[in-house]
Image (cartoon, rainbow, N blue to C red):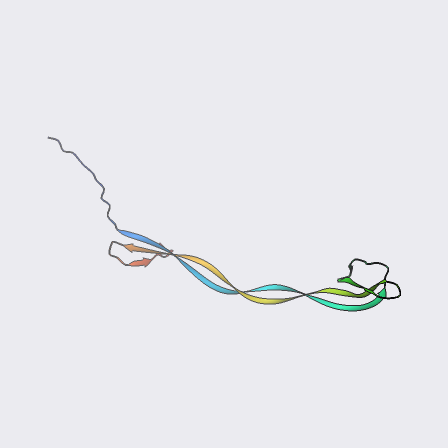
Length: 125
């Protein structure tokens, strides 16, 4: 006769852990610089004869576009009727816009035993 030893391991639930992710939204004002451009158009009468057409030209921040017409005279002559001066004006101002910022937080809860209550974990454990 001889005795034999048999060792088994039974799994018994002594507790469990539940992990959730909570997303929080917070609206924060953010200061931004907004730029605007406005175009001013001014018609400048010229009404003088010219020998030939010429292309638009730039004078500082003003674009000058010539407008020609043929007018009847004793002879046909090209007349510079007017110039259109186009200027760009830039302005900027501070404005407050609201943006939604999201952050995530993990909530970890532990349960002692199979019938215990869920309790949040703290950093001290």
